[in-house]
Image 1 (cartoon, helix red, strand yellow):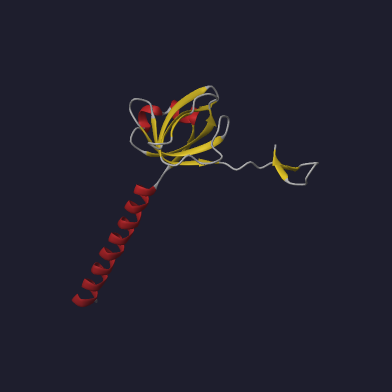
Image 2: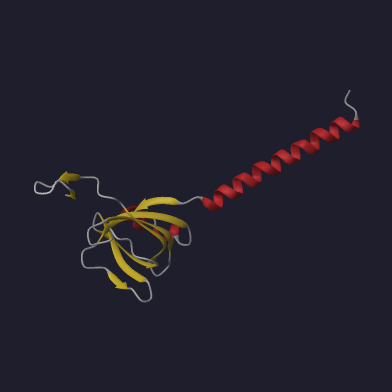
Length: 139
């Protein structure tokens, strides 16, 4: 038969393990970010307000509004005919332009505007050597 010290040790050890598991789980929940396309976000919009999200899409032609003094960037992402207005405060990436593939990370707000804290542009994957000087150019 086990004595009282062994029982207390096992119960205490079990509680510590349960607390550690809970802390790891709750820490992961706060850092989870859903990755969606614009059309997927629009399909689930009401259930996604206030959650951390990553959304990918293409910058809609003619939608870029850039205020360099205030570092405010507004634009629209488009995917499969669905449009998502985006507001971003920060430095505009060099590769950011009409038609660029981008990923924004932030929060979808009830007025239907995505407020981005992070803006990532994808690098072009197709390079081709120029015939006149040998430097690589993006196609």
